[in-house]
Length: 133
Image (cartoon, rainbow, N blue to C red; front, top):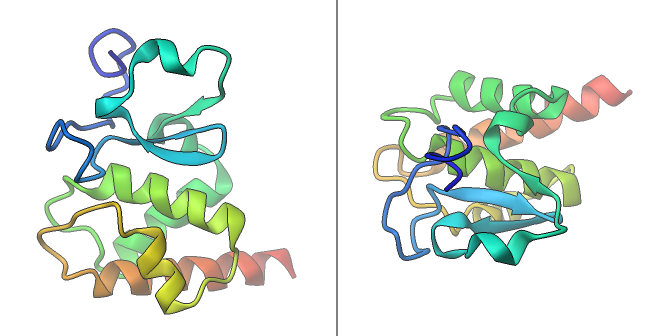
């Protein structure tokens, strides 16, 4: 529904079973796989997709951090990964490597081996903390 009816094309359906995270969105502050979520379940909720997130200063910083760190290759996982990273940084602006890996664990990436993504998140977190000083 989000892609076809609302035109929110950053959301991708990868597995259709809630396993890969390509369709991740944020509902009331929590990352959710939209492919297995009935539309009626979000009535009255705040729903955020990548289209909104990437327009925020932190969202742009996440996108830039992933790109600069080489965490974007084929790009299929990038929208869902970016959503998961945004949610992580909201709750933990200075995550450890373990916390980053845990925060993105619901998102599968077949290209990067995750290290570049982790480094991109670390770079983003440091830049955001520096910006706030």
